[in-house]
Image 1 (cartoon, helix red, strand yellow):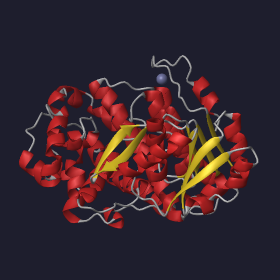
Image 2 (cartoon, rainbow, N blue to C red; image 1 turned 90 degrees about the horizontal axis):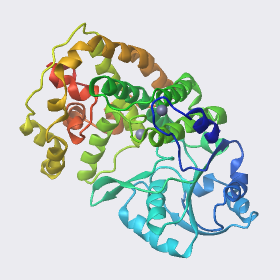
Image 3 (cartoon, rainbow, N blue to C red; image 1 turned 90 degrees about the vertical axis):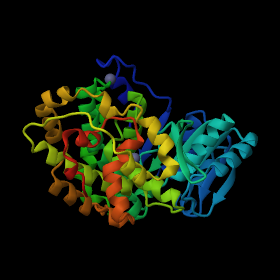
Length: 424
Ligand SMILES: [Zn+2]
Ligand SMILES: [Zn+2]
């Protein structure tokens, strides 16, 4: 992936925004585990590093230690058993240890990268990633979702200066991690729909070139769904590229719109509710894929309607509190004061309905196509597969929107008097 060529292709963008990114280099190719030292050195990454990994990710990256040594890298290993939750205690502990180092290299994906990303900012040292599984879209991110007292919050963190992905290592990653990454990529279908419709109805900023960049990379991954479960370096590389590129798309756009729409909010709702209950939820991308199937189905139902009548509606606080529980209500009130649905121009939704339907039809695969590609990729399609059942499952669809002050098509369904469409 030629990051500089992508940045160059976005020069003088008609959207008026300067699209640049602080990441120096992204390398995705076969056999790169043996060249990690050279790539870091070429990008002037400092030589005294803390290497953070776990007992799955370091063995999966066989050859990385000699590759560092031969280029004069001095590393100290900090090993976890099997890190599933990114906790602030770990962040602070790594940040303290980093006082003795010039940089941090995270060998892994998901939570491991998230704790190092924030620790790097706190200790003010550069950060690099050697990715071991194409499982989620956070690699290029400049924020870290971190858990404090069973609450997950997103913290500004340090974007990696170098991302290295060996496609042989990625292809050999467990099938469930690759399937989760596929689900996260597929979520960009509905994210783009929400972004385009928000631009249409609220004049929210949009960049057509960033939309195209994300759409193209997502469609490429979708067209190779049959190769996700195989030990196929090409398909694993494309999946990784899509995950990194959609992450960089957020930096280009200055918002999470290119990567995240209603499907992510549904997934986050399930996650925070489980967390509040002391449960670790299933992989991010797996839940996002499931949220995408549900959201896509509802959006297609909407697109069947020739016209709608829209009106602001009174939020049913009793039901919202029943869904969230007392602990979250302060935040929910902040996000809805006043609610996005009270600030929307209902007439504009009615007048632009044909265009809204057109965007849905242009961007989204049919329900059958989506299910087919998800099944082929080994990805989950029902909440039950992520241990999300009954009330929690239904509340995620109906009430997740209230945790963000954000336009999504799912959020405005009650304005249309069509709540009956909001089901799994
Ligand atoms: Zn632009
Ligand atoms: Zn995601």
